[in-house]
Length: 85
Image 1 (spheres, rainbow, N blue to C red):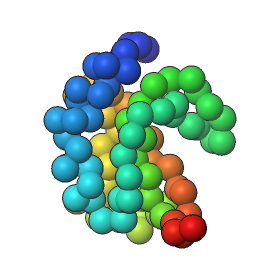
Image 2 (cartoon, rainbow, N blue to C red):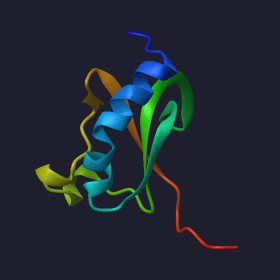
Image 3 (cartoon, rainbow, N blue to C red):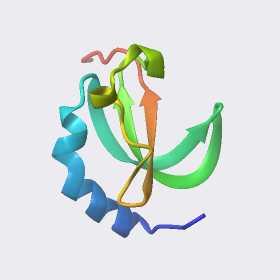
């Protein structure tokens, strides 16, 4: 499994930021560790945050976040409703 530097991921994220933010339901994008089955894999990934995660069956092909972008893994993470304090 390839290991990417944060700098490399940041460059790719900057290049594709507007594409990610255009997906319905996306509220943020960043860099972090991929989470699988609730466990931190320690693998760096592009983290795409949504208020509520949906199953693949609930989404059409145009709404699916790619599993990788330019070879960098992505991870959709649910963050819940955002409230201003």
